[in-house]
Image (cartoon, rainbow, N blue to C red; front, side):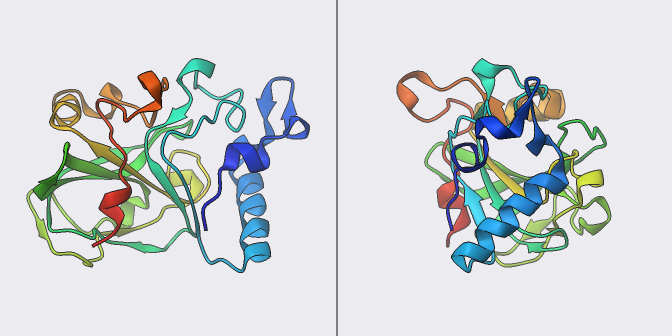
Length: 206
């Protein structure tokens, strides 16, 4: 099911002294599990360009740069993940920062670009679960990793972050690593697609 977490959870009662209680991964997971039970859903996902300034109030994010550039698939740690399209592994990165970091990340290069999208990211993976290396060719449906727990996925609740990259975005990552980009930014002009990270929804389906 789709859930806009900022709208559903980020009510005034969850913000104390300017800091959201949902920054505690356990609190966020309990809220999500309750929503899943109500809807009889196994998983949920959060959409592209959601403004999460309230959801993550008090985090490293600046209030004017809290627009989400990916899609989050909310599923338990240990859930297997696989690409839906033929890809090569462009980069594997392990980000140990547990204060809003990426955890373990796989950057994929699409064998055939999809519009402006040439590469994409799977983030918040369990470090020891990553089973591919740079240069590997991966067929659709091949398991490449499993979702990490909060202590190994940047301190976030358990989910998969999927973010698309244009060639410019990939060049930023290639030369500057994950420090060159973020999963959040300002709202693009006119609310249209971000110039470096377009809508990744098409990546999730064959």
